[in-house]
Structure formats: C-alpha cells, structure tokens
Amino acid sequence: MAFTPLHDRVVVRRVESEEKTAGGLIIPDSAKEKPAEGEVVSVGAGARDDDGDRIPMDVKAGDRVLFGKWSGTEVTIDGQELLIMKESDIMGIIG
Image (tube, rainbow, N blue to C red):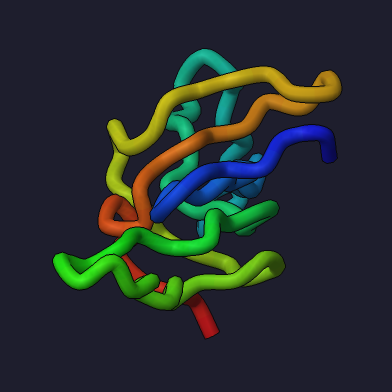
C-alpha cells in the first residue's frame, strides 16, 4: 500500500457482515448496517509523550478489531475502501 499513517493513527479495512441472520433470513443490502469490525491494515509509529518518547501502539497489522459505529474517516486508497482512525477509537482486539 502506498499510504502510511502518522503518529497514533490506524488504517482499518471493514470486515463484511453476514448476509443471513441466525434464523436463516437473508438481509437485503439496504437494511445492513456498516460493520464495526475490521482488520488493521497499517499502523503509525505511535504518539509521543511529554518527554518526546514514542508510546508503542497496542495494535498491529493483521489484528481484527472492534471500533465505534461512527469512528474514523472513510477514504479510498488503491481502489479499497478503508478507514483511518486514532488508536483510541478502537475498543478492542478480537481473539
């Protein structure tokens, strides 16, 4: 990818949601919500503290994460729809 996030920013690719409910009903595209789950594509080097030292990032490329419904900024890079968000917008790492 030709994009590297700066500081404590993370690039995330949304993971597609299920097409069916647990009961087997098919969900039409118009009724689907955007998933709040994704895969980390790239991470910045980390923010700096008051002394100028880097604060290491808790996530790394390849992690599956949960994030807030309205988190991040949607961008298209190399034909892929991605989200750029701060690490603090990520609620947790899945498995």
